Image 1 (cartoon, rainbow, N blue to C red):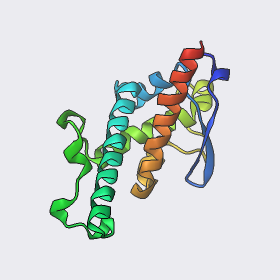
Image 2 (image 1 turned 180 degrees about the vertical axis):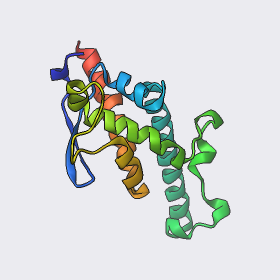
Image 3 (image 1 turned 90 degrees about the vertical axis):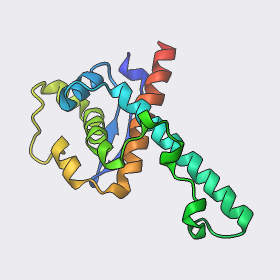
Length: 163
């Protein structure tokens, strides 16, 4: 893949703008950090999670509109949960995804640094994978999930079609 065909995606992460980009070796770094997991498998899982969340949200909004009440006032037994829509094999607790999503964002955001330093050591002031996992606010997690999907799932596929 020619890196000129895949633009950077800017993401504000821990007070600094990171430029995420997919390169052929991004998957290798991700696999090293996560002990052999494939980045494409994570992207597929994230896509399923996000799709289920959107479907549940649309269903709940339509149901609330039909009843004439705000979504947050729907009775619990009438609220659709995203987990109920997912195939059981795709159901992962959000907390269970945090390490993998952090690893993916770290690999995508630091590909130049990692390429320059294959040993993977961080420089002073540089965000480390461990820092991301410790500092991550779960409120920011959907943004990270979306960033991984956008960078890997969309831009990489577009680049592959143009190549």
